[in-house]
Length: 274
Image 1 (cartoon, rainbow, N blue to C red):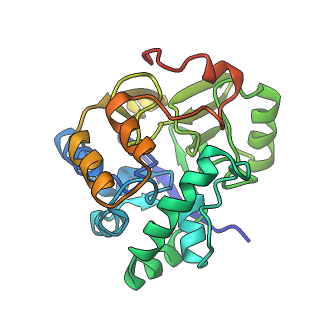
Image 2 (image 1 turned 45 degrees about the horizontal axis):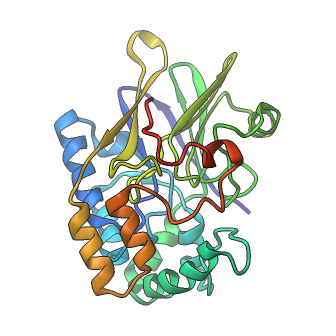
C-alpha cells in the first residue's frame, strides 16, 4: 500500500529536485543555492533516489534528514528499506545498467546506517499539496509504479491516464534522469531532472526546478548548475564504483541509453535548453 503525505496548501517559491545518487558534492552545492534563493526547507521537495551510483550514500541521507526538507521514496530507498538485494530500477536483466547496479547497490547497502534505514521508514511514496489553485502530486516514476519511466516523448495518452487515475492536474516526477516539462490544457507534467548525474547532454551540469505562485498563477523554471564533479569522480574511483559512471560525471554523457526511448537517445550529447 503506497503512502501519501498531504502538505495541505502551499505558497511561495518551491524548489524541486531529485536523483542525488549519493553525490554529496552536488547536494552541498544545491543546499547553498537554496540558501541564497531564500527558499526554506518546508518549501523544498526531493523526488527520490537520494542513494545511487556515487560514493556517499550515508552522508547524503543524513544531510537530507538534517536539512528538514520533504522527500518521497525512490525505488532505491524502497529496496534499501526492505533489505532487498537489487536496486529495483527495472533494468533489463544482463544489460549494462543491470551489471553496473550489481556493483554500486551492494556498496550503498553496506554503507547505509541503521539510523538512515529508520529514516527511510518514515518517507512517503507520494506527496500531495494544493498550489496556485491546482492539485499537485509528487511521484518518483509515475503514479502506478515507483520505477516506471515517463519521458518527454512518452505519449500524452499514457500521461493522461496518470492524471486521471491520480485525480490531479500537476504531476511532479523524477526517476528518468532528464529534465522536461509537458503541458496540455490544464495538465502539467514536470520533471526537475537529477542532481547526481549529468543529463546526457555533453555537459557536467545538473538540474533542478523552482515553482512560483506569484499573482496566484503557477509558474515554473528549470535551472542547472556546476559543482565539484572532480571530487565526486575521485571518490567513486577510490571506492571501486563503476568507472563508466565516474566517467559520466566528467563527460556529461551516459555510458549507454538502454532506458531511453528513441527520441531521447537521439538527443545524447546535445545541450539541453529549457
